[in-house]
Length: 281
Image (cartoon, rainbow, N blue to C red; front, side):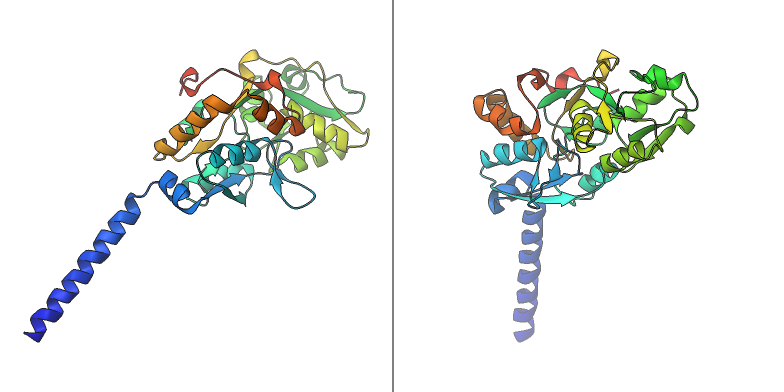
């Protein structure tokens, strides 16, 4: 009799364990975030999109967007996870964090790997060059025309594909891990120019104390206009939908514009595009 009771007790514990495991595994990222009030965001240091300020706080256009949007979903604690740009998507897939909040552009290649929300800004690119632009560079074509020129590009960014598509040879491209390395490459003349979003290049020019400048008349293919968005794991459709629902009502409001104004964004960066406007191939 005692043996039967013990056996039944073991079975009951096993069933309870299986039930608890099944319940935990069925909880979505959104449900966990709302239950705990916490969401983890992955970012790479790039002013003004996502970076650490002088007080050691993570800020920037994308983290501030994430904070405001998730607060409306009842998620008030943001846990930032710093990584290199090229490790953002692998880090998301490896569940190191739940959302990429780094100003990441929507591209067909990335759409095959992650689930993007609707874009929350649009942005053009430009070049960072020595003050006075002594080589008179104003396009990818200018760099492609001279095999001796080198262009610094952050590895894993859309600008790499743009440069190659414009005829810039692989040996002309200096791939670097982040924008700080771009800045240093141009400052030390290891690269003749760097390419990136207009706001980032302008910020680096300002920090160069007059040694560098952002090219004002950069000529680029209109299709290269970047559209930045938060990104999620493919299985987190409910989380993405919830975020889109909040952003649809919030983007373009005075509250939104006041949130992003400190980072150089204004009404000109608004877009009415949705993810449905982007081809996945």
